[in-house]
Length: 525
Image 1 (tube, rainbow, N blue to C red):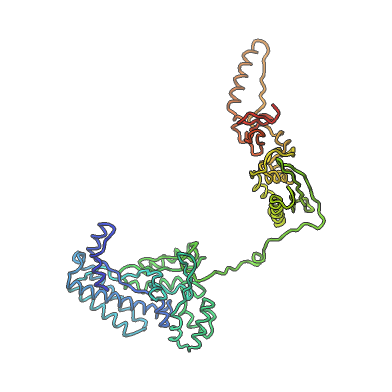
Image 2 (tube, rainbow, N blue to C red; image 1 turned 135 degrees about the horizontal axis):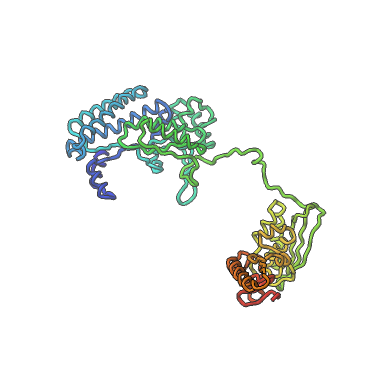
């Protein structure tokens, strides 16, 4: 594998010329492994344990040390990397540091023969690099491997622990794929469980998606099945300690995600980064659960405990009393005649609506009846009448035109007329002013903005002409500085009627309205 990767250094294409030149000088390669988390589980070692870290460090040191020996063999045959001659002392010093770290792995006696082999390999690598040099500057790296590891029959990716004993992967084309850890039975058998006990525990995990509470599973073995997410979770410190244990034996950095719960604070993230720096970890990536709308892997649905009052809260329908007062009015919009009945609560609020238009059985009558039922349910479930009026006033469709209502002379549609009428009957003046729905008298009583009373004084005798001229000049300057009627926001208000001739919204002119398109007036001028 080392030989193949060294060949690829010269056969590959690179994005820029500078990268190609630097790669040719250092001849970096990147050998690595995957499925570390599942391997530890199969051996019966918890991911966050001294035994697990010692075994992982030994495997990593053996991998990089063996690659280092092969790199020196290539250097003996093909020559060392061009960069080796420029910094041979530093290069050899790195090998010496690898050997020094390897001698400290044996503090936890996991597999004595493995630890002895690690020291032996790195001793040989150091001797050879001093004699012939090395063909490759960097030898190993912890690649992410991603979900492609599952295609290689691996239960975990890279140096990661298992995300969850049962996982759900979102597919690009839609849907999800359930991924079940296949290492659990092997781990249980190694821990001494019988075939019947293994079958019951595996069935429980498949159903509950967790090892917590599994039958026959002893508490001291629960840590073996701890995962990055879920209810039996590895702490962020456990992730960092594993990274610190194997970092001395990787030439490059490690692709490793430190999973933290959704409620992790900014201060905790800061402390995590400081801890990683103090442990000598080259790089660290954090992932806070549910920080993305759609994450590719999840361990199942999350149950959120809500306060009792929120759980019990649900929409309450306030029905009208069996005997209630109502208000009925007749209307006509264009050539469509109808009747509206509004049922009221005891305090006068509207609670139901009945609309009768056209002939019984017609499409329009059915639609309006269904619409009235919908509005009635909304009113009884607490939707404010003002919200309905804001939504429906101004809707434009046929039939539309002149009405027989002196307060609403022109309507854009039946719905527009009905809710303008309801606004006039049930909303206060400030509410209607906010919505732009005013009656005829209220529109006439509004003062025209920008027009002020101007008193022109006069002086007796010879000062009469000069005083008049002064007053005229002041009047012109004052009125020219004020906005005109058409420039004012109320110059063409929302409640201004539509022209009966052309249908364009009219503009206020004094106490009347005039159409700017065809010149028609409302009858005052």
